[in-house]
Image (cartoon, rainbow, N blue to C red; front, side, top):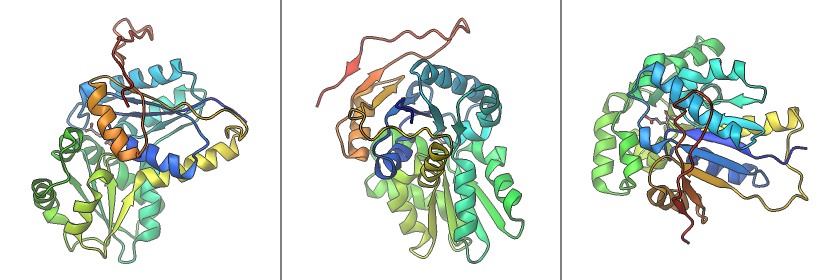
Length: 283
Ligand code: DGL
């Protein structure tokens, strides 16, 4: 048993799609979440920058005494997971392998599509993960750079957003029977994506698959939170506006949350954090 929280990181609000799955599948666990909204999108950044920023989020989470870290960000997983996993003394899990495994299970025609950020697609991390398990599959990848800013704007439940999704996904329509949402922001656009791709196409939400693996790791390492422990106090941090983050988080998680703005930039390389006084706990 281990009552410490699980740390989640993402470039912004996308990782909340993984947290929502955690609330459903493992509601007894406690969450510390950091979204680096100030520096998002990560997907158009260089691997060096993504690695540095991911380390800064990891160090922030480690300062909150987490028992496990989930990279709830495909871009960070593609670029930084291997290096950081080898350096930390706690379990660290990413979203790519679980998503790749689920797609292999689901496909019937052996034609899998992957959509993600430019950095994730260019890294070929999904294709490698799929071919590592099965080389009988044909993989088609597509970067969709406008999707992350669209989701972060919070203004995507409309016709204009649907048209944008349709325009971006055009090359994949009719080409695949399973589509991996290879960016944790994309499940927020799932309704539009499903409509464009057709109801017969399986949408694979890597986040949901990852939470199943988190559950296995908690069991394996005996890290589950004690049932009798006090109610979880989930904490959410962002590097930009707490208000905008809170609006999207409460809408998506269907519960009220407290959000705090923090600065995680480790200018001296000493792992020091300056917590600004901009706590947002308006209900
Ligand atoms: N949610 C991140 C991912 O899964 C978003 C990337 C971004 O900031 O571009 O890749």
